[in-house]
Image (cartoon, rainbow, N blue to C red):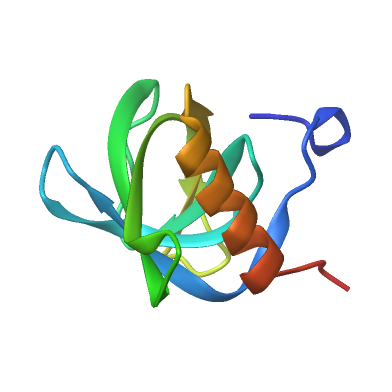
Length: 117
């Protein structure tokens, strides 16, 4: 697990959770809790397999300049039970995101993000 004091990119919490789909298994994987340009923290109702890449799709809340969704590859680094025993938290590192995906992530962070008090 990444030590928060060593994190290079500051994560921002989102004002609401965005749906994330696993495109390889064609199913809802979970919801983004927070994100940065380099990764996301996902909340799910099932444990997520670690140490492997995923092809993910994020649905956006409104039709904007980045469309209804964007896709990217990410590697699941860790998964552990959340504060509720029926929920799991997982950390993903983004893999080689193209400029348009980085721009979409920047827009999500800017428009939907806030700093935790």
